[in-house]
Amino acid sequence: MPDIASLEGDPAYDVTWPWTSGEPLEPGLTCVFRVRNEARNLPWVLPPVFSAVDHVLLVDNGSDDGTADVARRVADECGAGDRLTVLDYPHRVSRAGGEHLATPATSVHSLTHFYNWCFSHVRTTYSMKWDGDMVLTPEGAGILRDLAWQLQSTRAIVAMPRHPLTVVDPSTGWLDLSLRFLEPWVYPMGPDFTFVKAFDWELREFPAGVERIVLQQGLVLEVKWLDADEYAHWRRDGVDFTNTRLYRKLREFEVDEAIRNGDPEALGGLVKVTAPEGVHIIDHVSRDWLWRQPRPLVQHSLPSSLKHRAPKERVRP
Image 1 (cartoon, helix red, strand yellow):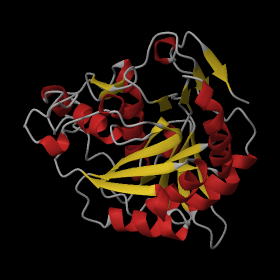
Image 2: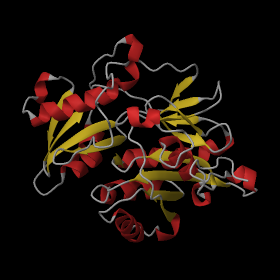
Image 3: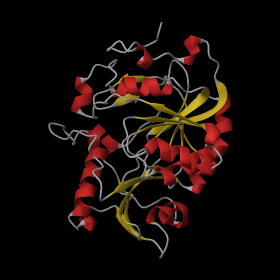
Image 4: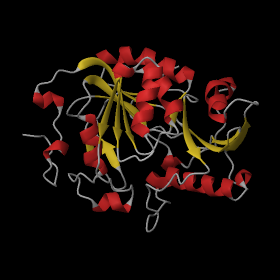
C-alpha cells in the first residue's frame, strides 16, 4: 500500500517512502530539482551542484525546451552522468497562491503531492531542495561539499540566503540585496520531514527543536531574466501580497516592474553590476563580484514582523 495514494487513482504517482518500502538510505546528500523549462539556466546551475552533492534528481514537469536533454548533456560534460536521475512528472501543477489553496493536497495537481512524490525517490540520508534558477558560487559549492558529510551524524536543517539577480543583457544585471530571506534548503530524510499543504505553497515539516544551521551570505544567486515571464507560475489576482509570508514575492514583482520601467534606483537595495567584456553577467557575479564584496552584504532592515525567528540557530562561518 502506498503512503499517499493519489486522489486520481494513478498508482504511478502514488507516494511510497523508502522507509516504509524497506529500501535503505545511503549516507549522502541528494539535490532535488523540480523544473519546467529551465534549459536556459541549467548550464550555470548544474555544474556547481554536481561538485557539491552526491546525487542529483531532476524531475521534469512538462518542459518543452529540452530541459531534460540539457541536464543530461551538462551532467556528461561534468563527468557526472552516473550521478543524475531524470524523472518525468506530466501533470499540470497548480500555481502557488489561490490555485494551490483550492487543490486537494493528495491530487497529482497539488504542489504538496508533487513535492512528496519527487522526494520519495531520494535514496540518501539527506536531501536538498533546489530550484532550476539558483546558481551556487564556487565558495557555496565548497561549503556545501564540506558540510554534507558533517551532517550525517545530525538531524539539522540548513538555511542559506539567496540573492536575486535580474539579467538585463549578457553584461548587465541588477542584484537585490534588500532581503535576508532564510529558507531552509537541506533536510534529513525521514517521516518527520515530509511536505504538507500550506496556504500559498507546500511546506516541509520538521520536529520542534531541530537545529537550524544558517550559512553565510553571498553563496547563492537566484537568476531572473528580464526578457522572460518569471512569474507565470504565480496567480496574482485576489492575493494579498502585503501579508508577511508573501512579502518576498511582492518585492520580486516590484523589482521586475521597476527595472522594466527604467527606475530601479527608486526601490533601494538594488545594485547594478556590469561584467567585463566577454564575461557573462551570471559568471561575473557568481564567480568574482560576490566573492569580493565585504560582509555583511549591504541590505535594508526588515520590519520585526518579517524577520525569521528560530529557537536554535547557529551561523556557520
